[in-house]
Image (tube, rainbow, N blue to C red):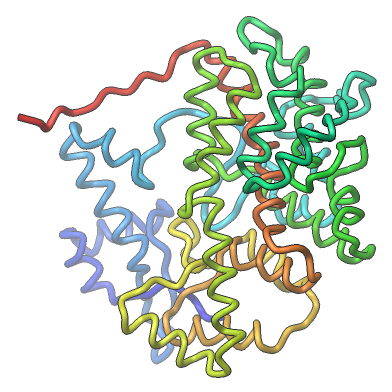
Length: 393
């Protein structure tokens, strides 16, 4: 696909930043602004508008310290330190390991051990990591609920989820964390949990083959964590109070239920339905853009060159000419690349999985990250308590 960023001349870049050419070149040498070679003159460099805008915002915040906190809550400056996940220069890394590399072979459980910082320990091999069965009447009742609410109904039945994390060593919490993950896998499929690896459990529940199981494994690994997003931050706030892992996950599930987070997959599903019902993909996109609507599942702010969670999954799906045409039209007409939401829905449709499976994969995978954030936040031993700027009368 073509580059999603735009590039401008040195004169325009200097003018945008209000700096000299020498300062512009210094920014480039420090890695703050990417460059590209001009197509009409290989001796001339062009400068990334995305990086220029990011640098302008960063400089503006520096001049107004009172706005640092406000900007930090909107894709802004880091607000806390974490050794779990790094998003930098278009790549996604879990504790120093590239998520794309991990997705080639690793299971979700292996990534969990990495993100939970288990070292050589394997909590999933612990005899205590066997989840209890759900009472059938409660499972039948929960089956009628939306996915996030179903998990929130069943999770309190897991004893490991009710134990407070306060003053407990993380090593004592790992087996319980493994139980919770396995319980969530069962809850997301309205099934009795067991000790199978998550991708094999899901392949059995959704009746897909070995290839499908491996694609599910790949998707789970790529979704395991995404730094300090809305649900992870909610988890950390609750974890800072010393609450149980179950309470922390309840916060994450609540955030995930919103349409701008995990609920985005439902909006992508509706878009795909619309494209199925209308033979002219380009016309559907053009009409949406003309009405001032956004196209769900495209252009992630952290990945101007493309979401690695999408590029790490879409090429491995069974060929689909119509999907490829849609993605190419989006790139050609809007300059936008797909996010993980498009990749997950494409996976669901390619394997003919049940409706809602994209969100189930997301929730199961992200449970690993939520637990990692809860365990890390607990080590800080401080209550997260930000302040508000009063603007009332």
